[in-house]
Image (cartoon, rainbow, N blue to C red; front, side):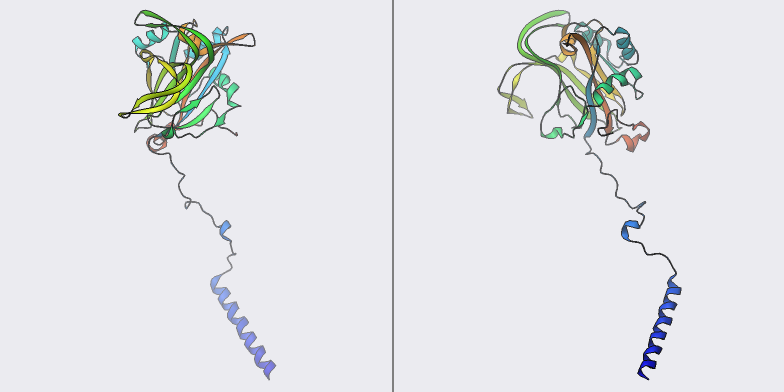
Length: 298
C-alpha cells in the first residue's frame, strides 16, 4: 500500500511538471553571455571638451625630386595664409599650406615611409610640454597646451641668417636645434585652430625662470630664439592636414629646419599635422570624421 501511495504521488508530480512546462513553452535556456546586448551597450567614452587628437610626423623626399615636391604643393591650399605672411615665410625659406581630407597619393606614399614605425601616444598636455621627435606620433592634446616638434639634428655650430621686414640678421648659435612650438585651440563647431611658431633652442641646459599665468616659474631648459614674425595660425576641420616645409629653393630657416644630408643623399622633410578627431566633430558634423592616416597595429 505504501508503494502504491508513493507511485500515485510521483505520478501526480509528473503531471504537474508537464502542465507547468506546457504553460511556459519550450524556449531554450540562455546564459547571460548569450543574451543580445544590442542597444544596451554603454556609449564609448568621449574626449574631454578641450581635447583634440593630432597626428604629427615628418615625411622625406630627395632634394632633387622637384616633380614630387611640385605635386605635393599643387594639392595644398596656401591662400589660407595672408599674402604678407606667405612673403615673410618665403624670405626665410619656408612654405606652409593645408591639405584637404583627400590626401594626395604622393603625400600618402611619403607618409607611409614613416607610418610603419608609428607609435601611439596619448599625452595629456595639461601636465607639461610634450616633445615630439621625427617619428609619426598620435597625440591627445589639451587646448592651449604646448607641444614641441623637433625638426633637425643638433648642430654643433649654426650660422643663422634671418630676414625680418627686409632686414637681414645674423647670429652664431652653439649646440642649436630647430623646432616648432605647437598649440591647438578646439572650436565649438569641431574645427581646430593650430598655432605654430618656428624656434631654435641653443646652448647648454640650465635652470631658468619663465613667466606664466602671472607668476615666475622655474624650469630646466636651453636658451631659445623665437621667430614671432613667422607664426602661423590656421583653422582645420577634422581630416585636414597642415604641412610645412622648405621653400622651392632651400635657404635660410627652411634649409636648417628641413634639409639634411644622410648617407650621401640630401633629403627635404615635410612636417604634417593632421586633425584626426575632436570632441565635437561627430556631434556637430559627423560627415567630417575620417579614418586616421596611421593607426598603430593595423
